[in-house]
Image 1 (spheres, rainbow, N blue to C red):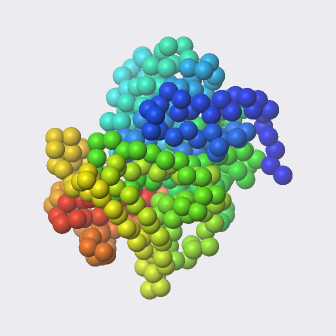
Image 2 (cartoon, one colour):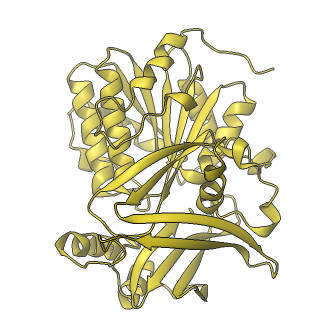
Length: 359
């Protein structure tokens, strides 16, 4: 039986105020926290909504007078620099962040954390990712770092969506961060995040509990469950999922198995109202993201195929045409020695309409 490492449930219950100071459309997530010690928030990298959500939520919690620990996918060998930056001794730009994780909004989140610490609030920030020179699995290393953070203070971890899965059926070295922590008697709550299609300045959000039938398809799509993973119990994979959508786009999805072994196929039915949210606009803000993506080897909505090739540095490993879209899939070699699909780019015409980061 998993044991409780601390009895100060009031402290973590205070996380129920997570969204109280956030904009009205940002959902509250107290139902997935309960009396657990660690909240694992999964994300797709480069999404500003995720960084703002975490930043604003941490700020709202700290204003209540409680203490909080935050763990981030920053290499542990950056801890000394991170500590100095949090205290304002060196600039935030001195912190080295993996280019896949890094983004302007990520730096804004770090700046916000620094401001909280300099204001005297009870916050600590830890770099939990494995240094490049250490030959161990990322999840194994992060498990150890996160476990050391647990105690009388609630812990929030911001990691990739896959690592936030509590029950994947993997064992040993293949086990993921959240399930590793659960197996080590740490009580864990987790939420994944999903971004619907469309390009818009502001997205609305909805938290869907895993017990809700709608959550299953979103969780499967977020985790890109393949045909041999169809036994994945989505109600156990996470406590829920935060869905970000553009105003004017209503989405219903179902996942079916590709019997040829090509993996899950997502069928999307989109109803676009008067707001033309599905039209990709290459305005100055979009061009800024595109230029950043080309410099940092990362896709961006609105990229042309030529720009996508320049950003990704290579041809896609697989090109498919599904339901009027052209999909480019890229394979990556991870730290554990396995190939996996890490990016899927969805083109409408010659432009990226949306993309998925599975790394």
